[in-house]
Image 1: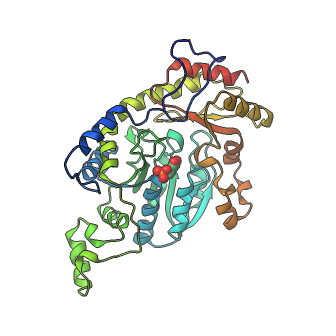
Image 2: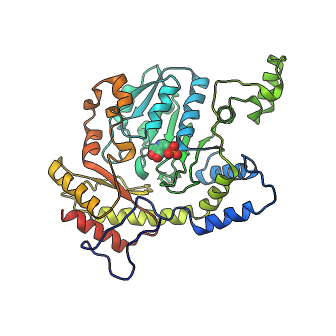
Length: 403
Ligand SMILES: Cc1ncc(COP(=O)(O)O)c(C=O)c1O
């Protein structure tokens, strides 16, 4: 999946073309590491030593106590919501209108009522003021998403959740390496979820992880990942309690909850361990790229006032400053003609409330969220990968500014 821009001629706005959403995210080095692993006689391929090692290395990188590796970011969302329900009971979960589908689906699937808030245009995350206004004694969690690398945390939100003892869940699936006040995103929440899908900062082909500092929640997550099976817990006291409460059951087959099988494999973990080694270096380049992109876009045409501090972005956010359908149509046409891949609406395609699965439940309520609707119709993202040269980024900006 290498870019096809020829290296011999200088890249200009006139000849710029062929820009995929992601390029070369699983490298020759990763593949060779995997081949070495597979050369062993009779290797264990199901969840084993490499999964455990990857979980430990990931916890250390994020700055949390525990990680549970699963087969996708959506599975991470799903077991997080299921475990929250098990731990704290039903009620409401505050969610953004701009996020991935599984952030809302997991809330519904666990039996919670989602309560939607609009976005803050400066970071595309939830508007903190609206979140705080919507907290009630029925709120069981605030489930925020750090959109496309921009930090969505602030001190007011953290303080309010702490004061009211409401678990904050961070979806960091699009923001590996982002920080808030010098600490990694994903280390603030009661739990946090990451995705390792191919198009993200790093990839295990498919994959995801849930992080937490809460040891009891960690045990729940381990069981939720694996059929609700009690022997998956690492806590001997938990196992002993179930064994004595259910003496008629084989202790190897006690199923505590109606759960899932969302385990990953050694193959994915070997790739993850190999990828993690160069994540920081790659992210440095991505941040350089984003700054170059935003610094060179015309601020009269495009929104360039994003809160960049602590951001770590695998995509360039292209949002019109003003509603202008004719201009937007010309932008889409040009990008298509040049084979520059983009995703309109940014994360998850824009305003989730416009999607059929939510219209069925909430009718036409999507019109109450003007900020997300602006991004839905006049926003998109374009790929930002580490080996993009600044010459290409400047050519892209010149092209966009001239449309
Ligand atoms: C914010 C966010 N959350 C969750 C997910 C789900 O991750 P996955 O594709 O690994 O299921 C995505 C996917 O792209 C995402 O962007």
